[in-house]
Image (cartoon, helix red, strand yellow):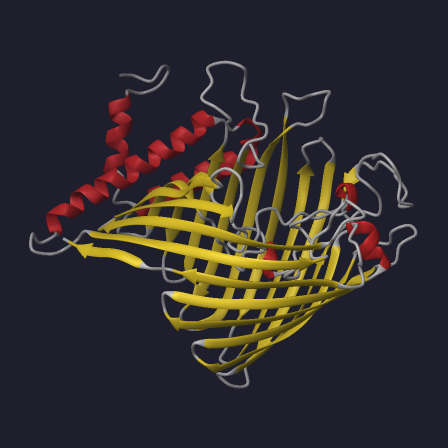
Amino acid sequence: MTLQGSVPFSSLACFFMQKMGDSYFFINFVGYLIIYHEFSFMTLNIKTIILITGVALVLFLPSTTMAKDTISHSEKINNFTIDAELMTRSELRNGGLPDNEEDHDNKAYFILERTRLGLDYERTFLKAHVTAQHSAIWGQAGKGAFNLYEAWVQLTSRKGFFAKIGRQVLSYDDERIIGSNDWAVAALSHDLVKLGYENNSHKVHAMFAYNQNSESVNGGTEYRNGDKPYKLMQNLWYHYDHPNVPFGASLLFMNQGLQSTNDNDLQKTFYQQLIGTYLSYKPKNWSAEGSFYYQFGKNEDGIDISAWMASVKGTYSPSTQWKLTAGYDILSGDPFFAVPTGGGVGLGLVQHKTIKGFSPVYGSHHKFYGAMDFFYLSTYLDGFTPGLQNLFAGITYKPINKLKFDATYHYFAIATNTENLDKPLGHEIEFTASYTPIKEITVSLGYSYMHGTETMERLKRVDNGHDLHWAWLNLIVRPKFLQTKW
């Protein structure tokens, strides 16, 4: 077989295999792919994803095959595990989430459940993992939601290179931008190819995703109302740390292709980018963390984006039992709606050419912006994005290793000067406790109270905005049914 206008395919395969031992060749080749996509991501298609996957297999399979000759026949190299996670959480809400309806009882009580069954296989240079997931509310009509949460295979070389292909959970840095969002019942996973290199001090990960609604043979490549908000995505992440140095630094670049919702050009794909850094310094009994991200490109309506966010956090542990935490987050926002909307709330319905409201995309938002999930897990009125300021302080007490208590205070305010509204949104106080009697079982509970302002009531449309309550009780059991080696 010969590639048209090129050298024979067999010659290319031989060339790649001969170069397998040369790490510099691999680095340069992956670098070429990354640079190619940085400057031509607008033309990325499924053929390119297949090319990347194929090259990864060509590069890694020879290493794993040659490794078999070095393994003793008596050595147990195959590991197989069957485990599960069973989560049950009851919640009591009294004004805990925004609601556009009026004149009804604002209290709610329900029980959530999530069940995961995992299969894990590992041997030299090869890993495979599958997780099936079911989530529902007790008494819900139908059978709830059943899906394949994870299904991936990973090939690893001796020199630290790896290729991970399939549906997988992404968790980077403090999970502010890319995280599992595991508090949510369904949580987050992504279908993609991940290529990487890791050693004691340096990690480089490149990720490539391409989504479609169905296996169609015509009709173009539109992607609407799918499982993911993006049609395609490429991420490049670099991290530095060292076992003997308490400093860590990460750089992240993200490009997303979003299917147009503009009625004038529904076939078009708009591209949105994010670039930023996460820094941490963690000596013996205190730590400091900070991050900054800038968002640009266009949203799905084709409107330009210029948004940013910054965060800083410090912790101090005077003993093994106590920890003090304080920090501040600011996410940029818009003084007006991005597009005209029906009705009016005195905010000045002005269509502007640039969106300044930052979106933390695929982060674990529950960890950062208040346990009651008013911000970034739920939207402001009509999708308005005035940004957010979050000033917080907390204390953690561990009387014994298996028991922990937390108390956290948040002061929330919008980040922009908005017509006819003051900036403060309110004050939130959170109390949580968790107990782990054995490593497979964790019981936790929490209570949150928010005293909202008039701005909070108008932007979030919450009843009794000055008195918002939320309480929950959570049980997680993680049994391991089988673990064997051969």
